[in-house]
Length: 452
Image (cartoon, rainbow, N blue to C red; front, side, top):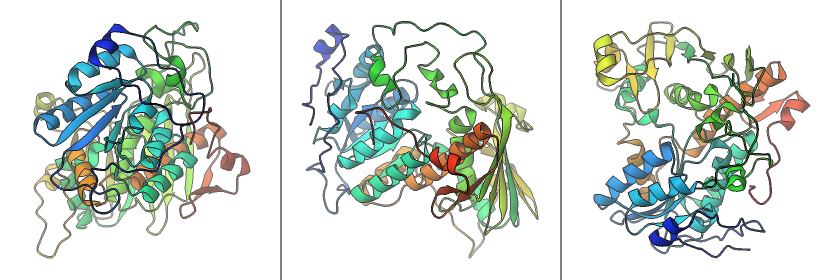
């Protein structure tokens, strides 16, 4: 059955900290598009404001909301809804969003609003796939935070939903849209490194929970059942959230899924490998022995690609390569604790960081594409690229196919580590082959009604 939308006005919301009751049945997802959408399904008219709802408004979600508020003041978007399972975060978001926004605790109420064209999803990782699929089925364009998904099954469902409903989906691996990423991409695409045979990523370790705390009652502002969503129910523990969800395999997956979704996204993009994948994955590492956090502290994963043949390595920590210009690093606050080295038969290139900051070497920064050379796409900005996808129907720079391909690298790396063996992968079928146990782990049960 469908939920009846229950917007909370500004005064009503600030008077209450109670939660909306979770639906007793799965959302009957309507197949509609906003009446404001013109032309082909999923494509907006070029001069219309995009009406946006925000699902998850803490952390990165708060940053997205501030960006959209600025775009609202420029006349490009209208913020119609903010949604979060934490009433304190929701109250803060309502103050930021502007007088016309309504507040919700259940994302399904946002999706049922026919006036909303697009949603920004910045919830914990375990919610990304379900909310993206439901949003696409409701005809909403989607900006979803990285990593795209927690399982192979989820990623495939996201791709299928985006294609079927012809909506623009942008995954929040924003490194591809950074100016120096464009420079590095052009340098590589024009053969300045020769044939690239290895890309080696480095990143610092994931944390361990050295001081576990007992389970307890969730804080009054948090709807714990809605926070868990697709995950099996379990008692609340402060080590689960908010931001610490990243250090659990079930809801995060460690640094490889967090920043790996940035660094390896750029690697696939520069190597023109979004459409393919590795043929084998082999991981080793160490996992915590106490506390709730169970993602790898140290880790090294080797991915072998074929046709063309090259190797991708995720090394945690690996060999840190400090940014060579200390003055620039200090002046601009460059976080040089992670990045990647692209090694070819003619030369190599370092690309530091990989998310909201990307830096590369002067030889790439100073490179000019020669006459007849390869011109690579230059993003106007990650949100702006998404807006173009909404308005014109063009494929976004970090579309859901690319987002799923990157997320699959992180999922497969963790599975290889947990199983303690090398995995074989069919990049065409996108399936683990020759290992029945590992194949079963490409999916996992989801708790009703928060399921695909």
